[in-house]
Length: 547
Image 1 (cartoon, helix red, strand yellow):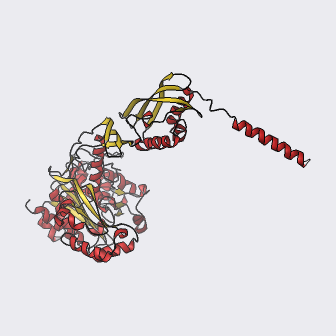
Image 2: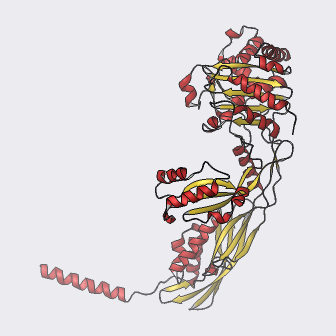
Image 3: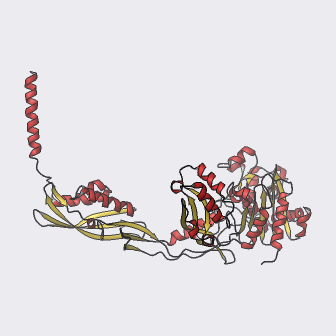
């Protein structure tokens, strides 16, 4: 029995082997191979498309590179013409349309031939069968095209920011045979412009990131050229040159820099052009489609350089995190925003640093009571919130380029800063920006529409009507009286109306002087009058004649 089964299996194996040995070639027609090739391209199936060719490995590499290099939103292919030339050869034309976004289409036709090989019909592989001008030593890619970058201007039309080359000096321990020698020599080179980047600092950075490239310093091109590019030719030192949007005046330091970069980038994105290029291994570039992007308009910001420098001089007088925000009531223009180093370490607290309000919203409570004919102590938090909306607070402003908050009330606590909720969960929270908006709205007599770019005012989904004129005038009178009865050093500015506020060791002073509203904030102040001193410094700097 077992022997019989063994013989049967042997016979079956021989029959199967005979069938394999005499198997016929692929029975697909030339037309079906062309159709399968195009169908696989439409599905983005690189492997399946390559298998329809006479050289699958080369085809897979070229087709894969094409899809990777172009990265389209959509691509469609079809056989637009097929010619049956007999039993050994056929010919087809393929039309292609690549879409890279609205108005960005690349359409073309390419030709291919098919041959009936021992394995059946296959497309004779040539990279040009999928894209024009494509060869074995060329690749295809989609490129963004930009004209000259726009300039960011200040409120007076002067250059605030422009694109400059930044030289990032890096240390590469893998190519540094003697780290002690390299860091010492590099420190000597940097000493005239960056003396704090010494050998000890660089050594510690490399120890903290073993085996990695570490950044030593970033240098503006003028500093780099002043030091001498040839002096950076040291073992293990790498210089990376990158175009970067930076302030033209290195004295300008403001949390508005990153928002302005966002607006600048949006400007470039809106005007960018595009191109499809075929690129040779020798760097030769053949344009296939697209257009050059036009130059975008220069960006006219609201930042007043004189006010900004005055605010910067004021914040550096504090030894704890401090910020100043200034707004023009008549337009809502953010004239300045400054933070000291301690605040910079915490982020853009001038715009997003929510802090328990303490008595900084007493004016809003008073206005809520006057509007409702009750004592301020009898108004609810909801009443304060509604009145706050009429004074620009808690209105969910959408300001192009700027992430910000003004105030957060009890009925709108979702997403509140963790630090705020830990310190006091019963009080509304405010930001320096919010108190500047409050002061500006009182001066204006209606909620301001803050902006950081002149032609891009804020939008909001929170409706708010202006307070009754008599309520607004009572607010102004209260601020005038507070300033007149306030700290002696601020009485030197008779046109100033404003007042101070506090919560634990945090201090504020906010007010209005002419067409300038402002808020000063000092966190964990090292003196009860620290915000007043900063305000005094701010006012003194503004009173100096323009250079």
